[in-house]
Amino acid sequence: MSSEYWKGVLNRLPDFFQKTSAMCLGASIMTSSGCCHRHSIFPMAMTMGMPYTYMPFSQYTPYQQYSPYSQYSPYQQYSPYQQYSPYMTNPTYPQYTSPYPSAPYPSMYQQPPQIQDAGAVEETQSNSLGRNIVNGEDTQFVSNNWQTLDKSTTKTPQQNYQLVGKYTDFVSNLAKSFVTYIDKSNIGNKDGYLSKEEFQAYYVIQKKTNESQEAEIEALKTEANKVFASLDQTKEGKLDWKEAAAFFSMADAAGATNQYDGTIKKEDTLKAMKNIVDNSTAAQNKLRENYGNLFNRRV
Image (cartoon, rainbow, N blue to C red; front, side, top):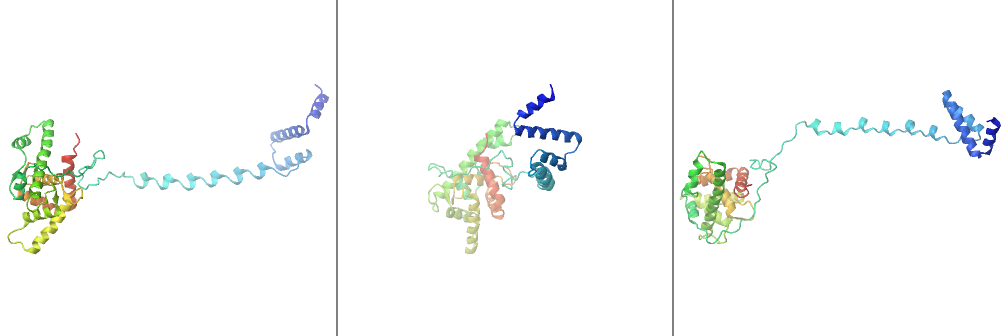
């Protein structure tokens, strides 16, 4: 087709498209020639009748005048992984710390014992074993069959489990008998628990001598209060039979063999009490451990 034809076509286009086409043509020519400066664009724009008043790309280029990646790069100026990395400042991973120093429950899968009020001792409870304890006599509170099986060196796992369960029954019966004997005596209030005053009277009876003076007896009462506070794991101001059972299991292991053999002597009870007076924290942990082993075992 002739040039006259294309001139006619261009003449029929709106004025806006003429200027746009001319702008694109000029840009293409300058790009191919390698010149894109403003001194080249300005004459063409003026020739086309477009005022050179606003050039957004040349005046407000964000990548040249304000680059957030170069000025505010978190990886260059502030790297939290370098300043606050626990693996760099403390390469040794902290080990699990048991809330109980003696660690009766060192595993995170084993929970501390749930200690609740065991309730009052039944009215029909026998007090013969408790009388022997209070009078300072050697007291065997397990059966002969239990002791025989305990001394056996060929026990099966099932027999070991039976020994543990029976021991809980035996020491619980001893604790109930002990609470009943004191609670129903002339110093008791007959409520099925041991109050602080009742325990004080028992403690003084165990430790005083015929030569004890009034000041010594008062000191023994002070010791009794300290022992009572450790035994009272529920912190209700009274001892129930489960708390007493935890103490007698401690006294049972305080003998010469340091084993739970089912026999408690007066010196075993006194030794357990002395351990509480001398080191109440360790004794409280042991009492709590015994409580959990007796009454919160996992089967």
